Image (cartoon, rainbow, N blue to C red; front, side, top):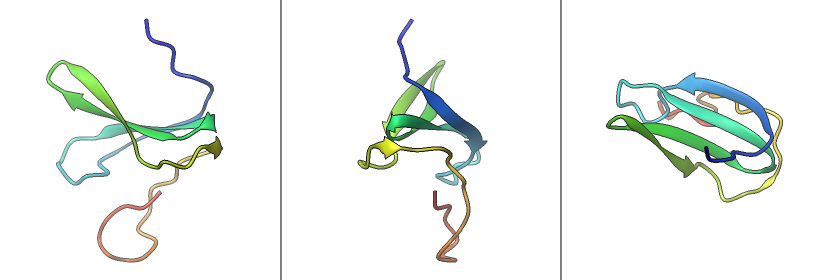
Length: 70
């Protein structure tokens, strides 16, 4: 089992508009990762290169461009 870190918040959301929800996780003293389904497994990707004391990931369209922001 792979260790993930100290999870502060997680949310299921379709952040890339592919009609399938991904798990987006905010970590304390790390970053925000998305876990996207790839066949029968999930592939993890950082959504930001900023690492810090993340408390939550809140998806919303802040700049009103039709895409979710965190």
